Length: 492
Ligand SMILES: [Zn+2]
Image 1 (cartoon, rainbow, N blue to C red):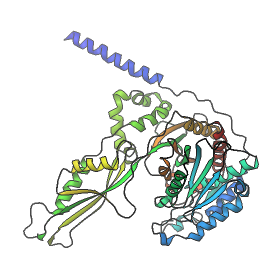
Image 2 (image 1 turned 30 degrees about the horizontal axis):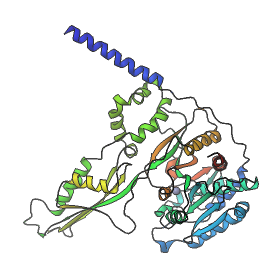
Image 3 (image 1 turned 45 degrees about the vertical axis):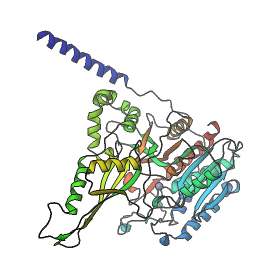
């Protein structure tokens, strides 16, 4: 007995020692900050050109009849007028009347090209919130060090930022080696079918292959990971898929005075309850990798579980599962969004329907989710079908881009050079929403989602929300970032 206790004590001490040693060794590799780029961005005139683009209300609507085509054509003309040098060298194509594709021919057309993305459209302003804006959403006001308005973050700063960079490079007689494309869709906010998808098909039909695609998605955040003070540049290396499943129960009806023990609505409710009770299995495949970049920055005690995932993986998983934003990054999510059944208080429903929206984790597909849901529901009376309502069909998750390849390295180096911030870390992550870049995954293995933008505190809520704005100084860095990325394609 005594010997057993002693042995246990020795093992416990060995375990604790192992945990501590692993934690102590789990330190960030010091990253030298590359020299700052010497590009001279004229901050105030660049901000003025962005502000001009904000004043053109290129608003997306699900109903194509509501789209103000003149606004989009106005933005096309605005870009042409304000970036004359770039327009003198880059070839411009209009795709589906409202989207733009620019081609900057490389000196070696045999090399796979580079595609830079943003979109021309913006989301509408929520009715009733107009008066909450410090400056009206389409005023493009420049005040208090910010450019204000819808699209400053999402994502006209990407459109004009890329044009500014091209303008500067053309002025400096830059000649790309790989062909560079700028793809600016006009309908990203409503699915991207007319814009990015059509552009991808056009490039595909020309036999274009791509070395690198860079779209919006990640940003530079601070204060989102407890215990990490340093800014984190989050670069999306994959994005989740999407499907809505329709659950239907059909039975013979009747009078509510002589009901069976379960009506159609009751059967459906039980199925929905089982689905919610049995979420998809979590995995730390992406979050674990993200934390391997970020957690070494944490104070010692907080670092212990991350340095010892083999032991603490399940604890971390359950902590992440308790927060919706975190849970979304570790599993396929289940959201019961619509439910209906019955038409009258005293009539048994003959049909009950629920729509459940799933965001699909890489590794699973629309098909495997449908199969898993059918199994979880475990009731042959409940039909489980992919919702085919208009445009909504379902999209499989994207492939995962390489973090050890030259594309990620170029982004990492450029972020650090432009930001010049001590201790900053560039970390790969899984994008839980969808971007236009998903249409290009057939043309390349290297799709990254990142916009050089600083997001702190309440900034995230400004995207698609009220008082969207970008700091003038930050926008100058957005331009410098694109400038350096484009130059950096020479070394890809
Ligand atoms: Zn966007």
